[in-house]
Length: 266
Image (tube, rainbow, N blue to C red; front, top):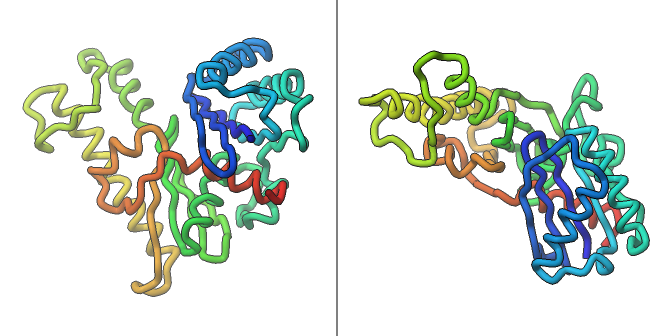
């Protein structure tokens, strides 16, 4: 049984795998001020709720884009789980993944751990040219070739950031819930107009970016190419972005599991 940890700017998603099967997953807000013992108490409670004994956790892999939380997680695992681990705790980095993906950036150290994890997971499913769109605090586009090369991508503000900016930086625009889609693009009220702008607008932007990326990546119109969406907002935006082929909300967790098994040869 091994634990995978994806520490993001807004949320930390963890999953427990046993014999290749995800047997539990949890999504909590990321708090950069969390202490080692606070993390231990929180997750001990979650494990206990579903009958998981920490003594059975023999491996841990962590991907983090929040340095302070990465440090806290490492200390937590060493303090509370190290007695049961069969291997060192794996921390995802460009250097650690050198045999699993080729990073074709000017400065490979710049790329976020989660972006490499998603790329490895996507390539493991389909060995073709593709782009992974992760709808998180920021929306990232990651481009991978059939040769398992990470080419780079694009980064833009996430949906929550845009909604917050609209409400906080204008005098009359309210905070809104976009979980219920507008029927028409032309809104008949301020709230409808904002919903339309966010959902149809982001959908059109995604389609446009994918079209441009595809032109740069493929040489033939018949060449296999796919677009994978993941992240908390992926299901919300997908109906408005015709370019998305696959929605995989577990892409990052499964990617961490794939990396763990490959690095430990299990």
